[in-house]
Length: 195
Image (tube, rainbow, N blue to C red; front, top):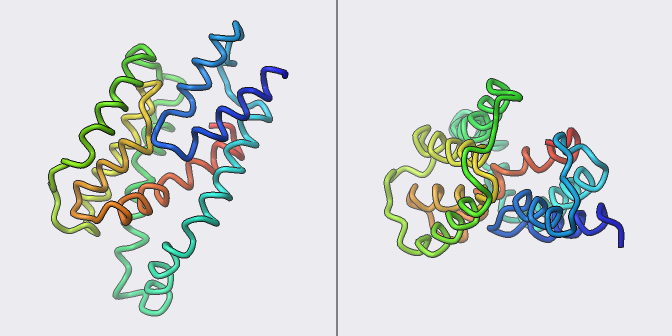
């Protein structure tokens, strides 16, 4: 089996789990004595991201639809929905574009993996920091969680965002649905641009 095929499978399987897909691709590429390209724009990476983005959309659409329905029926009353989404998604995008090529891992891969394990172990006891789950503060916290994952290879963005969403007074299933929703643009960007 060729290296891109192996990495495609690793990316496809790990992208929708609360573990780092890019960290596992790096680990597998090191294990098979291949270096992961500096600009990850190969077809397998983009295809795996697009496949996961579509699968995530299909799986969670029934859960996200009431949010969209509320907004479409009463756009003024539910104007905070798209603003929340823009803040939560805009923070990591802004960090990425402002730092550009300056983004460098600031810790070794094992640190990210270890941090993900710690996050997942303590997720059941995450305290509530923000009581209003639809506030701009909650969206900013979630956006910062996504941005932090840019600098730590091996740190799961999904696990970090899930913990952040839980701290905004949401039920676990709601937190997971929101965590996947705010990651969806990054998944599609990974599929289209190779980010």
